[in-house]
Amino acid sequence: MAKRIKVGILKETKSPPDKRVPATPLQVVKLIDKFPNVDVCIQPSDIRCYSDEEYKYLDLNLQKNLSDCEILLGVKEVDVKTLIPNKTYVFFAHVAKKQPYNRRLLQEIIEKNIRLIDYEYLTDCNEQRIVAFGRWAGIVGAYNGLRARGIRTDKFDLKPAHQCKDMDEMFAGLKNVRLKKKKILVTGGGRVAMGAMETLDQLNIKKVSVNDFLNREFDEPVLCRIDPEHYVRHKGGMEFNLQHFFKHPDEYESTFKAFTKVTDVFVACHYWDPRSPKFISKEDCLDSDFKITVIADVSCDVNGPIASTVKASTIASPFYGYNPQTGKAEPPFVNKRNITVMAVDNLPGELPRNASSDFGMKLINDVYPSLFGCDDIGMIERATITKEGKLTEKYAYLQDYLEGKE
Image 1 (cartoon, one colour):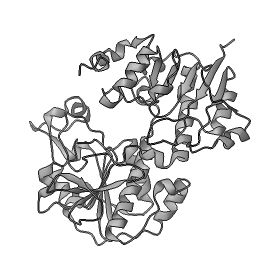
Image 2: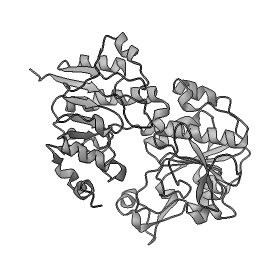
Image 3: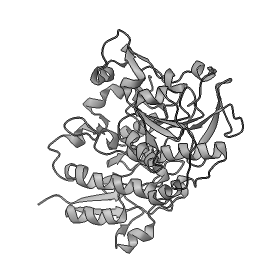
Image 4: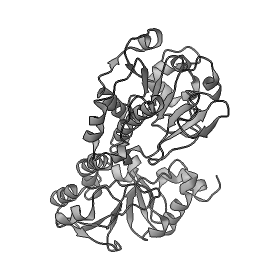
């Protein structure tokens, strides 16, 4: 007989608040039905996108104190003051890349003998991520880029995504958008970029080839999505090979500058390695033929590949103006010579009900069989950063970061 496991759904404690949940009310019911050995209780919250009443309506257990739970499920980082010793926590920890702002979180997790499982590192046997919010980041990021364009030109007004009930309401607002002849560029080929394309597809914009995008003028708005082979080249002239680029990004140089001369709205959805060449430098922004007016930086690598992303923005204040002359952020939509930047770093939080539902089903179907049963493919083990009061072998490289030595 399977061992009984009590699972708690955490109230989110990160600031600014995140409304997403790892399990919707209906998904909690499905979870209990699929895994009879699991009991679930929900910590009450006045901020999550599904109200306490929605959980109560399905006769689910709400419980403020989760100290009797073995496994605790959240979404974003947990406030260190609320960590319960000797538990298993599952959330996006943002420590495995040595993020300095979360060092104390990792230290407390070690100190409190907590087993930390990070969603970001749940992978299949082919090392492909299993759960992610990337699609929703792309969906909302592209929408915000269009919204910025509307405000900047004073031609159309879109409701902020977080004020929409769901994606259907957000997409409905796009039906009345009429763009003039503009060129929209999307970088990337993964979940994020495909999400951005979902949004842009609502406008029925003509898609064009890379060559036509760079060299032709159109009497209508056009859209182009590009992959790494279109914006980098090998320094030694070697024919482009994607896997080689992933392994040796420092051997490549950027060819993106050609796109800055023809693009009006840039939706950045690419993955970027710090060893990779940059997309847009400060000097590029000063070129007389630099044409980009709106950059929706969904990837949001601050001080990274796109010079105008000098800081992250927020759901409440998603836009700022980048002044190419000073290299600094200014209030948005004031100086028309500035580049309008959208760099929200938690975009899925703008459509929390949709994003949570999608995420929760992936957990039920692909993660919980290993978490609540037998981890025969090593999925949970690969994502376990701490265990028994220390870093696991895979994440031992974090020791100096943990001790504050770097």
